Image 1 (cartoon, helix red, strand yellow):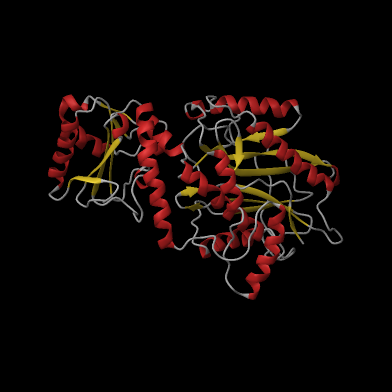
Image 2: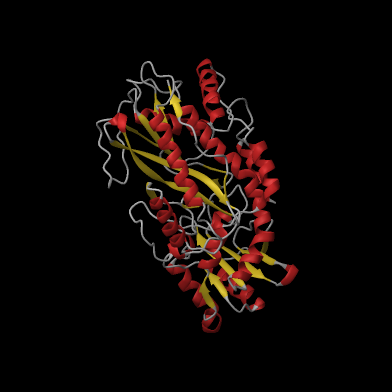
Length: 464
């Protein structure tokens, strides 16, 4: 499968970013394409972002693949015969929109999904108990009537199938697996009666595995989605957007936000841009160095960007250098600093081993960096339906020790991650002041190695 993925990746990186047909945007395309080529991707021409109507089919094909091939496996791993997802409009379960076909924006009234594992090749039965049936891939087990009748209908569906263990979405530690509200659980217990209610159990293991696991179809698409995010960064970190002495860091952040809006690519947080320069101290114990304001020649720029497209999310941080008058390239010290950042990435990803916990990966990576005298901080996290997705936490920016529970989650194959963190190193040209190289790239752990989904930054973006 992964040989095929590499082929898809090569084709994906040739996809391009659609831009408005104006003289200004044409200049942006030319400059951005030149910069992007050095980072291993292209930005030119139409066709990279699907119109809204054309997004429906690929999303629903991915959902069908997940329900048919992934869900039975995960339910059996979690030892659940049945999984209930019950939510209401304005209080949707986090997992709900990952389980229903698009276009769907919310639950309608009280919406109930029932998944029953029939065993073997029969697979998982997918049912709805709703006032408004969802249609394929779900079969309606009840529709119409009032709310009391709906709960009675759900109880009857469950009694007929007589499951041993019934998973419900309640969890103390995993917000994404805690979507069943207290009042809905009360109503469920009432409807089932004491004997069936005793079979209810937390589905947190199933929910987390559902969120974190990627399928072949998703892996074929993911590199292109990441490339879109990286492409807009390359465009923003260029002289087509930045005029030193005039443009502010906020101007660049809002340019990024606007470009994603033009492309109808939702951001999941406001883009962030900051600058480092000589004279702005970067203390060894400062978790994040940088300032806002007018961008100046000689500045080191950083951005943090995240988008979601076709239900998959990215998280990316990259660095740029603003040329001083007379400079034609990035100073050697900064090139070496970025190379140190890449080395830190290599040390971290080398510790990704199936079955290790996030805490174990963190500790091993920090030891490896310390052995090479690299001052680093690690705060990597899973990616998928959310930018900060469930799965093994590998350090936190404010905690370089063990993270209880979420850091104890084990690493599984076919899972996505933001390889996120930073290194600090002194620059002689800055009178020994530290520069912080903050990097984050979206990647796949395929079982034996980490693969960057759309490459990683190994050269500076150059403004000037």
